[in-house]
Image (cartoon, rainbow, N blue to C red; front, side, top):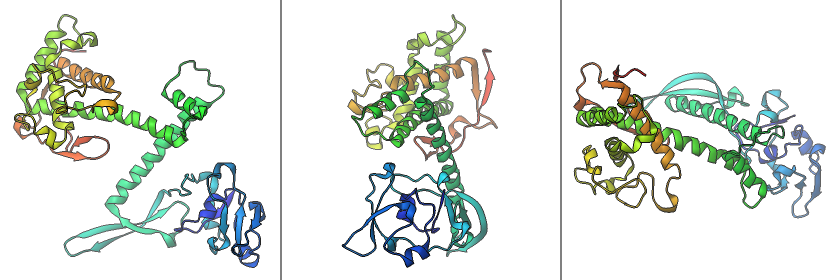
Length: 373
């Protein structure tokens, strides 16, 4: 199935009428009293000649069915502008995104103080005549993000389909099953996109945040060798008898827990709250050793996981994902900076991109095996 599409312009009728084979401009111009037969127009409304009440598919029942023939643009009967509906993901807002498929040309725009490289971008279902000029740097990142977005969306769709498959005999109910059950109950308006958004949020909040915290904690300890030495001594002392990192006795890692708290204090709290602390810019895990302040949000000067009813539900899981790799790193390896870099010269610049605050520069360190796995 295909339909004519005017590249570069939104066409509400063409997007909505997925049952059309194609719209002929000549047919519309010559006969304004009826639409293409496949559209099954129901009635011509008397308020204005050419207003049509269209029979829409059930999945477009939320769309107002009245259109005017003037909304149909004049199309050339050109197969180059035929959009295959099977590959077009029309969203609830009757819009869709076109992926860039080719760079047609390059040029440089000279401004007063700088030069801006541009690229001419051809998108899917478009012709070269309507290709647009875009900033090369933005286009590179945008293309990668769009490709990643569609790949993640595909994986989530496959996961939903697996859970709704009648042949799925799994007896274990996971988060996806719960969300689908809530959707089927009909008590809440939960769309497929809502479910995908919740699952994506869970993955992002449960992985990206923990990985970033581990990265920042190691960086802070490398920049403050005394903290690294104390944390490493504690970890190796606690697990010396067992000979391996055992999660069942993590409660004995008092100093490592203080190091994690101090890292989160510097990372998460807003600037004004952070000023509450003495020597707020300094990395001092000792401030938490004899303190009752914890992660549970009861102390508003320290809320890395939020507080109250909006508090992060994955706090325990997130802490475990930070403590365990740090304990392994400190138990099995000694750590040094390369190229005779001094610890006080370690760059701690940050950049805001994605869900978390990341280090602007990747951290390069030399691991030296101390206790083989």
